[in-house]
Amino acid sequence: MPSISVIIPTYNRPRQLAMCLRALEGVDFPRGRFEVIVVDDGGSVPVEITHTLDVTVVRQRNAGPGAARNAGAQRARGRCLVFLDDDCLPEPGWLAALTARLEKGWPEAVAGETVNGCPDNLYDCVSHLLSYHQYDRYKDDPAAVGFLATNNFAMQADLFCAVGGFRSDLTLAYEDREFCDRWLRLGYRLTYEPEAVVRHCRSMTLRSFCRQHWTYGRMASRYYNLAPSRIRRSLPRFYFDIAQRAMREHRGWNRAPILALLAASQLIALSGFLRETIR
Image (cartoon, rainbow, N blue to C red):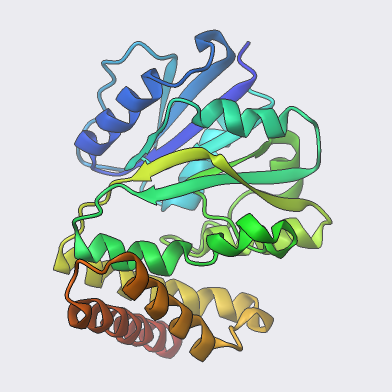
């Protein structure tokens, strides 16, 4: 029986899923020790598995990635659950780095390092900055970990069940933040493992960039209705730090488009937030 279950939700992205599974074939970890569970979240494109991994395909009606991860966890046979997105490509040492932490038996959830797999795509660069800016703090101050994203996330299966899994009403985003809130309230720890690296390959367009941040805004409205105390109180400092980092890391880009996209992403998210709040 495998000790690790890798759970991948997917929705109409056969090319990305194929690349993800191909990368999983290359991880430096014994094949017999892990299984892969792909959860088809009601997509219209059939999921076809042509790889040599131990893969189980679970199909459900479209309910969002949180519900898909829950469905995968219900079918998992491993003592530890590892969540990976279908557009993420794990490096060879990724799974070994995560499981080395989990097998110590500590009551903690672990997330690895997520790097931008499309560094020449300006939309990807800006979205990556917004999503993972706070991870830099975790390297120097592990006690500061208060949120971890689910695209590169692992924990013991019994603790996942004890917390109650992901909320299915946060259908497209923020299910990870709400899960981390409950995890911490129960006295468990969140930890960061920079050696567990995946490359996030979104290849965004202007349309997908706008759609993503509109969705973030909508789900933020639902999330803050559940947890009003989590509303960020230091927004000016947060955006100032992001702008500084953008200028430092992307000097080859014209600075005006970066700052414009940062501002546009927040205006779009605010529109989605207000729309959902009014509804």
